Length: 395
Image 1 (cartoon, helix red, strand yellow):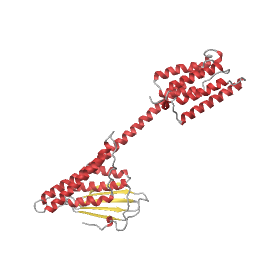
Image 2 (tube, rainbow, N blue to C red):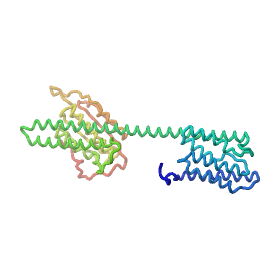
Image 3 (cartoon, rainbow, N blue to C red):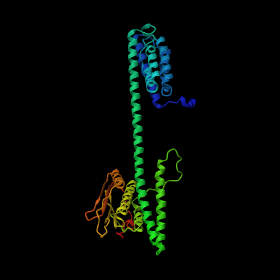
Image 4 (cartoon, helix red, strand yellow):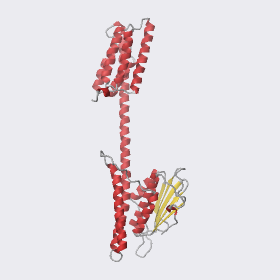
């Protein structure tokens, strides 16, 4: 129900409507008294203004507001020397009832409005037939307008809810793609690390220990990233007190390249052009494209050598991941055919930024993934010449 102060509050728009209705009705009342050659009664003018001021409560109490307007209007009709008419104040009050109240209340309000605004018309208790008919038509017109506005508001609210639900669904699909990228990459790396540790445990304990440390770090990072994404799906829980870790970007490519090398895949990484900061979402897309491409290489091509090339251009950033493909029992390159959710996710990520993605088998075997992402003209200043990302290609 709220406190008394809350029930008596109104908005600036409510005040403007009330003042406007009072000005229009009082002006019309004054013109009509001059036209008919009678004096302007102070009591009638006060009731006109008071009925308009009642509109301040029309949003919270539409039925009470309409009742007050009709009672004060009846006082004006019975005390004034001019013929009453359907003013702006009762029209606004009835409109508010049509917008906010149930059908039964709307019907009762309409049945009461037409005769009460006609009370005293032509000197008769309920006015002459023409005045009553005109006010009945005005009542129906206002009621119809209110019903149409109510339907429009309902449709607008339904569209707003639908748009919000679509946004939630799109966010959930994005999270699903993020989870796929994280799980596929880290689980594949952990599997290879575990196999390498097992193979080197007897004759090279140092290499086995290094593989186990990398496996542990990869598992911890996977859990952290998954926890951050799954937190988005939680509803109605208290917000986290600590800020989440930043999303990876192009500057983190060295880390996954190192993981690929430790997993036994010969991976070459090179950077062309003056490196500069990328928008966070673009940097994350570059990182995920490389991560997914290397994961696919390990899945479909084993430990085939791979090349990662990051190119900075004035208006775009390009990333290319190529591998030599799997080999058959005779050491010859076998045809590479890849697909699935990973490539679909990469394509959607790149398209979201207006870029292009090429993912197809190479002419001499293997597989090539190349993405180009446009950048704004002021996409960032070049890094220092000693930036590690400007190193020459390494093996």
